[in-house]
Structures are given as structure tokens and as C-alpha cells.
Length: 64
Image (cartoon, rainbow, N blue to C red; front, side, top):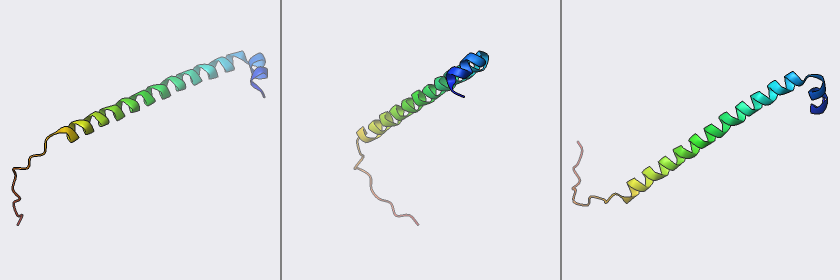
């Protein structure tokens, strides 16, 4: 059954489906935004780690 026929015969079902699709789209957008934020945080941490000066005044201590 195509969407137009379904819309004409059962508008309440189409409305409910559209509502659920909007909710699903909203949640997917939020998840993608959170993933993007997490990637940004990881990139900032990488920059912080890479920009720290390396301490070359340490000596190796044998283990055992």
C-alpha cells in the first residue's frame, strides 16, 4: 500500500508513524552530536598530550 492510500484510509496510523520517525530522527541527531563532541574532546586531549614537553632529564632504571 503506498503512503498516499494509507494516508487516506488510516490517517491516525500515518500520523503515529510520522511522529515515531521524527522522534527517531531526533535521537539519531543527538547521538551523532554526542559522537562529534566526543571526537572533538579526544582530539583536544591528543593536542594537549602532544604539546607537553618531554622530560629528557630522566635516567633509565633497570627492572629486576
